[in-house]
Length: 244
Image 1 (tube, one colour):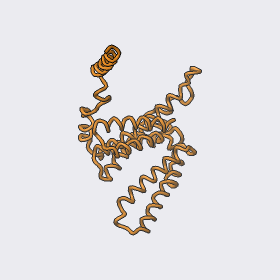
Image 2 (image 1 turned 60 degrees about the vertical axis):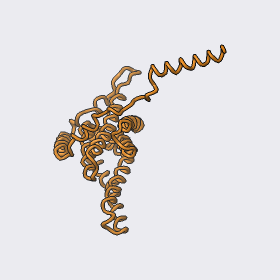
Image 3 (image 1 turned 90 degrees about the vertical axis):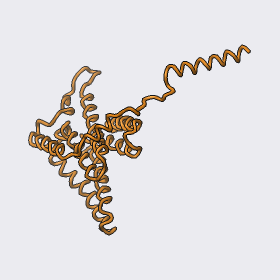
Image 4 (image 1 turned 180 degrees about the horizontal axis):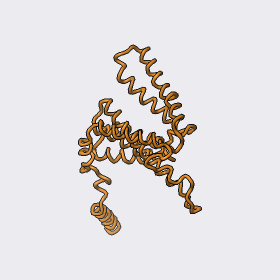
C-alpha cells in the first residue's frame, strides 16, 4: 500500500512538472523513482521488513552506479568491478546491519525529521554529482514527499473507523522526532541545519517551479463553448439529413 500510493502520488506530481515544461521526460522518470523509494523510507528501521531489504538493494545499486560513473576512466576494469562490489556489499549488508543495531521500528527513522534529513541529503548528493539546482531540489523534494506519504498512511491506519477507536500506534508515525531517542533526534536536527547551510541555492529552482504559465490541466478543445458548438453542429447536421 505504501509503495503503491507513493508511486501514484509521485507519478502525478512528476507528470504535472513535465506538463508545465519544468523537467525533461528522463527527469520525470527519475523523480517518480525517488518518490516511490521515499514511500519505503520510514520503514528502513524495521529489521525484518521487505521494504528495508528492497530499499537497501536499490540504495546500494544507486550509490554503486554513481561511483562507477565517476571513476570508470581512472581505473582498470578489474579494479572497477572490485570497487563496485565492495561499495554495494558494504551498503547492502554492513550499513544495514549497523542501522538495525542503532534503531528500533517507528523510532527516529519513522519521523518527519528523518524524512527531511533524507531529502536534504539527496539534494546535496545530486548536486555533488554535478546536476543543476532545480534537479537537485526536486530530487530531494520527491524523496521526502514519498516519505511523508508513508507517514500519513500509517497515521490514517491508526484510526479504526469501523470500530470507532484509535489504535495504540496512533501518534507514533507522523511525529516531528522520536522522544525515546533524544540524542539521535538532536543529531538529526544538527545535520539538517548543516545540510541547509551547505545546500545549493534555492532561488533558481524556485523561479523555475513557480512559473506555471505553460501548464494545461485539460486540452484546449475541452471547454464548454467549443463542446456546445460541436454538439450544435452534430444536431444540426443530423436534423438536416433526416429532413432533406
